[in-house]
Image (cartoon, rainbow, N blue to C red; front, side, top):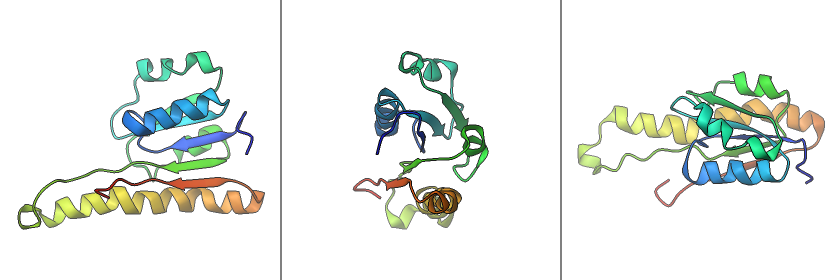
Length: 135
């Protein structure tokens, strides 16, 4: 898939592996949506200035479609967002467990569902689901 001028949404991309993935796509000419739970800083967006692509940031709930609307269509979705709650099961509350499921599973489901219909209609696109050994 040629990536120049394609739109890529990377969840969980404000640091770590997600940020590295976003940089790689931008270096290949793709427009990128950065996403994370905390506010997307101007300093973070500025890291992408030399690539000559459009980069927008959206913080918060990964089921939010605001960033998709900003770029129009999404050609590649990278479901990278995930959290861990490293506790023994005996010490984990139901709320802790639900939060992990909501971000790691429901978030990926919601994002995939948001882009799947337009991708199917266009008869092109890619969805990449990432996980860790903890996931």
